[in-house]
Length: 210
Image (cartoon, rainbow, N blue to C red; front, side):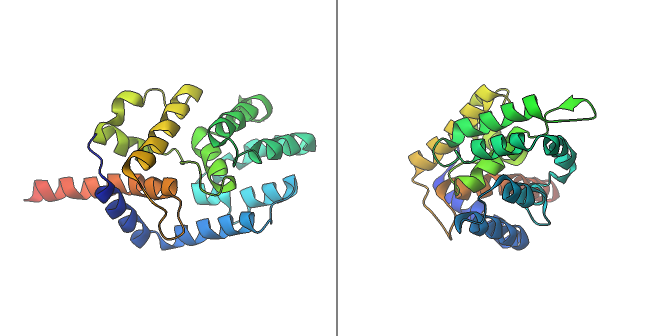
């Protein structure tokens, strides 16, 4: 594989330099969960919808209307919260359970779903206290460019998500990625991979100009 620990740390540091506000909102969400601020489904709903909450942070506010159908039967909100609470113990499976719950219980304008793998993995990232990678097109692009393309087939399916999760946990373990600045090793990798497309684009422009 072409990735190196040195590159991951460099890309991670570059991401943090450029994304101060996003890191601030992220830390506020994590802190709220850690201090026990999320104990009911109402707390979960507020955390999802509020300004600078989870959907805002993930850029998924457009999906808010999918959740409204749960209001007619609040037991479904309770069920979703119960699923999410298993994030710490089984992050990989919890992501799949959230997506499955969404397909079965949520809809808007006749279209079922509303919680994609990127958003589901975001929920589990926060509620597992950083022990789950957030699947993202930027990270997928970075991994494909650096030797992992053969394992990244149909990533937005249960099997594809499992392969993605395993790739990220393998990289962290095999390369000895350590916790940095309050970020778990998996979050260090996340940020590094998210930064890669911008750095790669800048490098290509430099090559063309020169």
